[in-house]
Amino acid sequence: MALGTVWVFAELSQDRAATGALELLTKARSLGAADVEAVCFGPGAGDAVAELGRHGATTVRLSTDPAFAELLLGGPAADTLAAAVAEHRPDLILFAATHTGRDVAGRLAAKLDVPVIANGLDIEAGEAITVTTAIFGATQVVRTEFGARRPALALFRPKSFPAAVAPGAVAPRVVEVPAVIRECHRRARVVDRSVEIAAGPKLEEAEVVVSGGRGIQNAGNFELLREVAELLHGAVGASRAVVDAGWVPYSLQVGQTGKTVKPAVYIACGISGAMQHTVGMRGAQKIVAINKDPQAPIFKLADLGIVGDALIVLRQLRDELRSRPG
Amino acid sequence: MNVVVCVKLVPDPDSVGQLDATTHRLRRDLAEPVLDPGDEFGVEAGLRLVEAHGGEVRVVSMGPERALDAVRKALAMGAARGVLVTDDDLGGSDALTTAKVLAAAIGREPFDVVITATESTDGYTGIVPQALAELLDVPAVTFATGVVSDGTALTVTRQTESGSETILAGLPCVLSVTAGVNEPRYPSLRGIMGAKSKPMDRWTLADLGLGGVGGAGAGQTVVSVTTSEERRAGEVVTDDGDGAHRIVLLLARARVI
Ligand SMILES: Cc1cc2nc3c(=O)[nH]c(=O)nc-3n(C[C@H](O)[C@H](O)[C@H](O)COP(=O)(O)OP(=O)(O)OC[C@H]3O[C@@H](n4cnc5c(N)ncnc54)[C@H](O)[C@@H]3O)c2cc1C
Image (cartoon, rainbow over all chains, first blue to last red; front, side):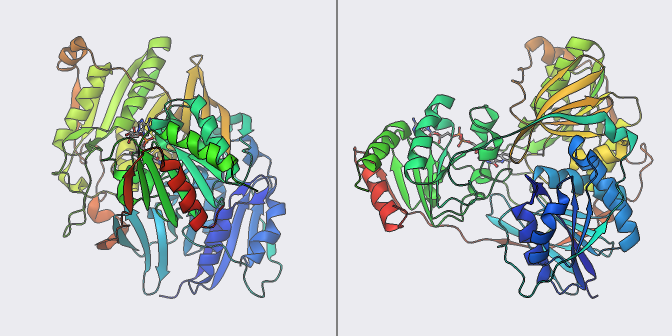
């Protein structure tokens, strides 16, 4: 069965197309689909069009209705998508496995009563559409085939695919989608929004990530990680345990339910190495672990493991880096 | 306030999971089953709402017979009553089926707030709360790190990709909570004893008027499960004061300094 139109649900990040959308468009181009289109909702959607086009969207279906920023996106986005699906009948819709992606895809699957596969790592389309997911911290790989119902919905972990500009891409067609905003969704309003702005490179893009876990002992000690990260022109990451404890914001979380990072060097400090953490960093070229427990699972995947007190080692590391010439 | 908390029995997350090579289902025989630790935060959040505003917490679960243990633990923490939907046809259910079953069980009575974790510890598709909200036709306020209420609405702080948001949500709604949202209480001895006499229902798919859902009704098929390549361990050394220097050497070799 030939693959018809593929849609990519494009999230906005500060009025730009989120990297995840560009990754998905890049992948969608390789599936042999009849057409690849992006769908984007939010007051800033117009600003994302050019970038989505460059990455292979021939059409961008958008709504700039202010409600998409004033309300929780999931409900209105799923309703608007459902109406557009009924009209244009795409075969496949790809989402990034982010909080927003999950909010929209989960509702849409229930609304349309169509299958959805979460935590995807790869996708192929031949006779059937097959999605690869990793479970148990990527120790096992599962391939799942969609049945005949369309559209099929799939969510992919960030960084599953590289983002690349489409050769010869022309400016996409822009089509306004009527926003469907039901009364019940007006009940959940965003009354405040804050964006964490970290100094230095973004966590997902940094060449060096210095990550802290519960072994860092308290929020204040994260300052030491920030100092070391800054000296290395890198970024600070964290385990979910310390995000849950409120020591650092969620935007720093690495792992299954956080970010996926693939830096040149990942330094795990006081992190035990639970599979839900390692799935987000095992793609690093080199892994360094500092942990006082010689049995910590993190050592099983570290290129260099230091058994010791993370705070002591980090202080010495900071001092040695500071004293290096240039 | 009528609060419903969804809970799940999962293999103890501290033991390593495995899929059965032939049935492609999670092997639940390998680890001691427990109330999903992520659900304890939901139970606690529900209890706090009813303690402040009256009403009761009803616990809903889907799973095998022994998932009654998960419901019982929630009752021991302080929930008023529980229901387990259990049916042979539900083995291998996907996320959407789970949401349909939970929605049918929840929708039998009026509710103000339905609380879930953000994902289960074992299956973690992470889309059940949203699918559930759609089926119940209410907003889903997801990834909450803080919840307060005046009795008529919820004020929720939630995680976003880039920071946080505050949401003002009228009732009814679905609320998914992260592990940071509160400090769950331990069941007291009195709570554990009292749980034994609290009302607990057991429903089948037929009781809920649901046919054709469950494993066989799923719109997707697992075609293979393979073990991926392990990353190999390098050298592990005890820090004798030269640990930092070794890291510097590695950083230099990796050409990042
Ligand atoms: C569905 C699901 C999704 C999840 N998603 C994620 C995710 O995205 N990211 C994530 O990280 N986790 C995730 N988790 C949680 C994960 O299972 C672990 O609980 C978490 O990663 C543990 O964090 P930690 O290593 O900081 O803490 P712990 O496991 O408590 O480890 C702390 C480590 O610090 C060491 N230590 C203590 N003191 C020192 C010291 N002075 N010096 C050096 N070492 C010291 C200890 O030996 C220990 O190894 C998820 C869990 C579930 C169920």
